Amino acid sequence: MQNKTINFVSTRNITITTFFLPFFEKLITEGYKINIICSNASELKQYFKDQNYKIAYYDIKFPSNVLQFVNPFKIINLFFLLFKTVKKLKSYTFYTHTPTASHFLRITAFFIRDTKILYHVHGFRFHSSLNFLSNIFFQIIEYLLSFRTFGYILINKEDYLYAKKHFNKPVYFIEGVGVDIDRIKNQISKIKIKKFDLTSINIGVIGAYKKNKGWSDIIKLANLLKNQKINFLCYGYGNYKKFSKKYNLSNPSIVFNKFTKEIYKEMTKFDILIHPSRREGLSVSIMEAMLIGIPIIATEIRGNKDLISNNVNGYLYKPGDIKSLKSKLLNILNNPDLKNQFIEYNKKIIIEKFDRSTKTNDIYNLLSNII
Image (cartoon, rainbow, N blue to C red):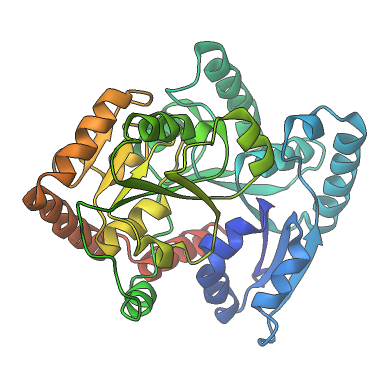
């Protein structure tokens, strides 16, 4: 008899609430039992409290900053809890996400035989914006951990081609988790969307409050444009206190807000989305902006290049090239026809290729075949 149980592993529960709730519902409807392993996993009970779902929750706090990584007591305790949990569930498939959780899980699996781990990569840690030594370091780490990886699911072409070339493992390509098109359309139909007005421009920025999300580009751009009527509405999550100490955030045109799981509602205030990230898998916030009808300027990195073709449906710029970023921003603001071209093209792409229900079925079919 087939054992229809999946262990879902992630560093934080936000991965599940943001991307995978419809997928969980699909699995459970098809008769699967789910075990969730992540930091604060028990908080997820609220999302399934009204359904009689077969879900078990395992709270394991993965490190989230450098101090936790170098604390030997925390790391030893983490491995002890993870080993104990994996040992208990080892006869099942582990479906893992996010680099930190996936790294610790696969290290643990070196000491437990017959553990099948499928790694859904939302962007490898190594990327073109890292310095040479950091890139080599993370590539070596992933190569070693590939020996305890059953297979990879990649969400952008660059990562897919890399994994196919360097890892002697099954490699699958599914372009992201998509967006909930019908739900977003229904929700924003109830909201008054900001009309374009050159006398008051809102630039939207979404991303974790981390260095690799490229916030320095936004702060430099805002300083260049501080005499113009341009506001920067920023939404992020993570350690804002540490982030605010690192940067000079005194410019009144930049407003930093907490992230919300229904960020697309906040996007209705945007005239343009700037996505300055240095490392991506396949950005859901870009896809949501494309659906809503917001022109996009993004860094020319993997993942972003899968969604935005420069001069066709948006603009790409080299990370850190503020002069180019400013030029492309002003070009959109001063060319309504170009802005409308980007918007219409983007809506078509999302509807044709990135409906979440289709992606959920793709992931489910792949996972059920592997199991």
